[in-house]
Amino acid sequence: MLSPSDKPANRFRVRACARLFVVTSALALLYGFGVAAMAGNERTAASGAHHVGLADSRVGYESTAYVTDSKVVIQALGERQRLVELSENSPLGLPAVAQALNSAEIDLGRQLFFDRRLSKNETLSCAMCHIPEQGFTQNELATPVGHLGKGVRRNVPSLYNVAFAENLFLDGREQSLEEQIWSPLLAENEMANESRKAVLVKLGQNPQYKARFAATFNEGLTAATLGRALAAYQRALLSGDSPFDRWHFGVEGSVSQGVTVEPYPSQAARGFSVFQNSGCASCHQIGEASALFTDGQFHNTGTGYRRAGRALRPPSVQLAPGIFVVPTVDAETETFTDDGRYEVTGLEADKWRYRTPSLRNVALTAPYMHDGSIATLEGVVAFYAEGGGGDPAQDPRTQSLTLSQSDQDALVVFLRTLTSNHVDALVSDARSVAIGERAAGGQ
Ligand code: HEC
Ligand code: HEC
Image (cartoon, rainbow, N blue to C red; front, side, top):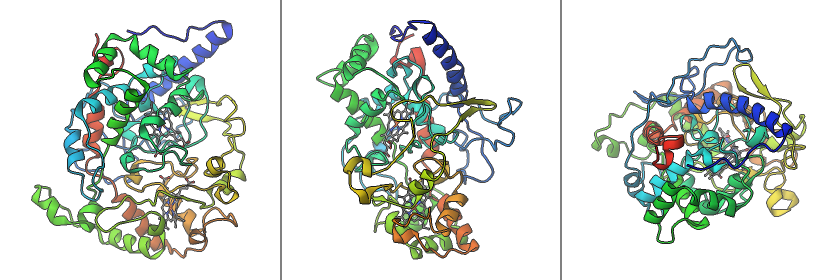
């Protein structure tokens, strides 16, 4: 086992840790136990989808008297799936996977993804911000809380189908999944490790990880192989084969696999026409044989402009019923400003451009937009119907959409049919990992 590396050095730190304990207890409630109850009709659940769902309705959530409907999943360990097979035969509606995946790498990556010891004080795993039951994002928080209660300015993106993302992060500052890991691992307001070396030394001192890396990679544990393992697991999170895919990309294929195909709702079909005719598909693209619902490019829909008009730093973030924290301030979060793609290119035209998100599984990934500022799909569609955020520099395609109420309703119904039939299996697979001490194959 690893020894904690973040011993409190003085009274201030002790207080900070005590507070963190409260915060992490609340987080444990949210993440460890999973928030699996369904709110309203936010998701058209696949039958038996007991692992998956959005959060509670949250009426009265600001009070500690709030009673949750969430299901307890901590004991309900899931079932390991054959993720490699999924990648060899890409799910309906997805492109083929470019790189062959390796089962041992995926297994090691999955283990690491759930291990809190990857953060400096061993409280935060990747999975606590990218929560399997919540679309590998967070439904509870518009923007996440990292190390010692520090705020992070952007909404957590879903990791489904991240294998196909050419530009990573909402501003596209990274291209490689193998390299990307160092951003959360080292960010002071996320996992807060001091350096790559510190992470490697710590993991290398763990006999189980050391052995598993040696067995999986010729070169053993290195910065590169740590990246490869985590990337392998994330690349395996392929989720297509939604009701939309079955309708649009070939019902026959699904029937021959013994799957009962329910008729596609006529309102969803109408929503799809609205989606195409309103230009949504020019950014959230749909190809001939597959669809990622993104062009992978950066656009200004007016969300940045709208955000700049509000107080930028959230005064407090609600973690759990009746539990609020005021995120502490650091260099990045001092103003919570976010200029989007401009921060990478320095081009004025890129100000407030963000990467077009995929709309696959969008019913599972609320809240929406780069800052989590829109709570529901109805809200997002209404945002477009109002002409976006109102920035004069906004992409013209989002400036004057005419969407009647019935168009808007149909769009939402269509968007809800983009939830993959693989989601439940992938969540179950995620929870096949033993968490904590047992994680590295130990006691
Ligand atoms: C404190 C919460 C938090 C933790 C912990 C965290 N992430 Fe993230 N993750 C985020 C946020 C927020 C973003 C978006 C950041 C941005 O765009 O600037 C993100 C983005 C990503 C992306 C890019 C996805 C995309 O669509 O571009 C990947 C991949 C990712 N994280 C993987 C990981 C892995 C692997 C770990 C563990 C080593 C991890 N994350 C830990 C919050 C977190
Ligand atoms: C000019 C390109 C463009 C067009 C046209 C467009 N979108 Fe978007 N869409 C984006 C971008 C960029 C974002 C992310 C904005 C942000 O993060 O602040 C987004 C976000 C969304 C989201 C939220 C997804 C999430 O995970 O946060 C939904 C839903 C959505 N769009 C649906 C639509 C619909 C429906 C239409 C047509 C009415 C449409 N979009 C038209 C570029 C576009």
